Image (cartoon, rainbow, N blue to C red; front, side):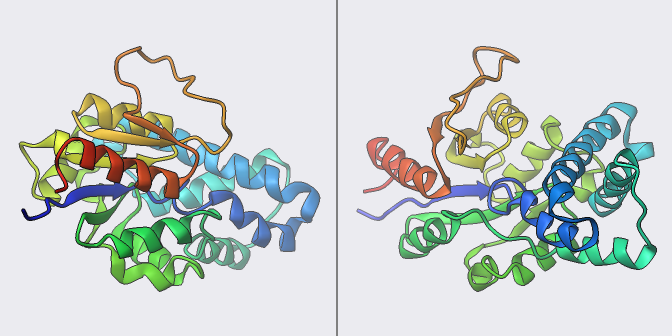
Length: 248
């Protein structure tokens, strides 16, 4: 009996790539004492801007590169700091070469070993240029760049996660337009997991902090599985698929 491949869409920022790892570059400009809090503020405003743009409508859309640059400026100003144009450009380049979370290489090695069972994709708010740069330039993700079947971006839709349109776009891109339940999202972002579940996908939430699921938007659209890392999520998806007779 032939195997049925499981489609797995990996979120990029905050799931495979650690946005906090940009603190290494921030520290060169502003010192170790401010670097990590600046990185956290940068990420906070980056996400907040996407949700605000979703609310005001596509006529006010800014792509994720613009959002990332503008949220950096917000974080810098909030801390009362100054930054030159060249320093800003340097930090944006660093954002295109983030490090992965520690368990990600093992996870991608497992995906590669199980390539007859899994069709892996990247699914992100990032522009196609950002995704391509990040996958190729990340020192840890770069060696696995050829693993992914496609880089799926929401940019052409002029809307961000967790709008329902983006998950429908993903389903179309992976050839599962009318089979949402056959597609898995792997994400460390609760808003992304809830959006995927509302859209009918299965979702693995990465709970690196070990807090358990505390999101209370509702009690129905919760993770299909909760994993301690991306490697644990891949193992869980393979087990789920086998138990569901999707894998012979």
